Image 1 (cartoon, helix red, strand yellow):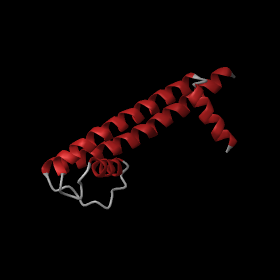
Image 2: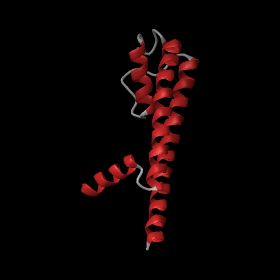
Image 3: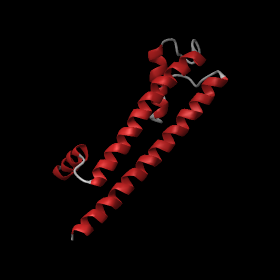
Length: 120
């Protein structure tokens, strides 16, 4: 557990180039995802107001967040064409982000391995 906490501390402080790159990429994906979620919430409300259990922006934001987390929600599926397209787009985005983050971590571990062996 202490090793994991040390790794998190090193990443937050960007103690090595690999840690700085990891922090930068994770921060970028996080900011992009939050902005997309907020915008998609507005679109979902515009497309589905009164349909699929979406009556307020918070309902729509809850729906878009659960779609982006790929856990779905208790709200019914979208009924309008725009809502359905938004739903598919959010699901595709979620899959791309999960695979991209896996790639970021693979790249990080590769760079850390090279940094350690370069010091030896």
